[in-house]
Length: 314
Image 1 (cartoon, rainbow, N blue to C red):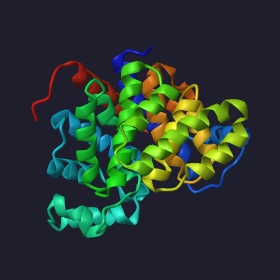
Image 2: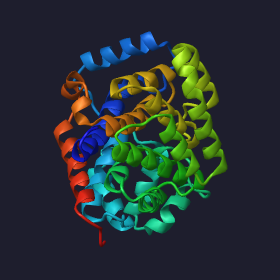
Image 3: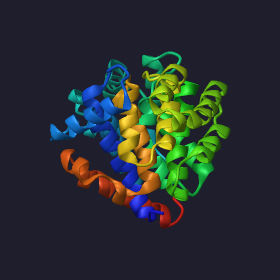
């Protein structure tokens, strides 16, 4: 079992590796596991690999939690704006939202100004790993903080609940040092939205199929759980990949094989698997191929130290 500090670093670095290795194949169709392994090798060989908005937002959230462990919307919005590099692949909805912030619209109004019913995209879930690391030992606090983080940008109940599920998966992987079928069941039990809970239970059931025939299982996972940007069609898929994989490399490879919103599914699966196995388990060649691994590692380690240091007061 990885040390808690190594697990924290693993969660953040797993996000980075999944995002950067998966980014060249975002939107690609499904493929075989063998072809996905080739894609991963080609991506790493094309270093340096740039991360996308997934990692940039995780960095902003991780740095925010150091000063505001319970999340303060105004400060988090300011931190996102300070880090924002639009060329990293932000969607139109997120860019419209940050424009609302720049124009002075209150943060508690901006999310529904852009999406009247709130967004159920996976943008809140893809950045949420820092919350799982920081609050791994307090699951109910973790859920509250994850929901608060998510609601800044994704106010739809599915967008919020999926982010909480992803944070819960990272948290339990961090605290238990493993992530398999029992942990998927734990996450499913805590889902508040019926659809998300059903898909998470399906993800757990599909793990046995992966053990029997990996390529056939991938087709079933893609068709049953989904691989698009909707949170309910990517978070359960990422959680399945993390539980089916033996390490971060395999989790990311599974995401590459599934296709669709590859970088985000790989980032979320990488975060969970990285938390379970620790930074020491990560492939050195991949770490050497991506940008800013030292910065990302430091954030994960610092959040783990904060978690071990006592209760938050702000």
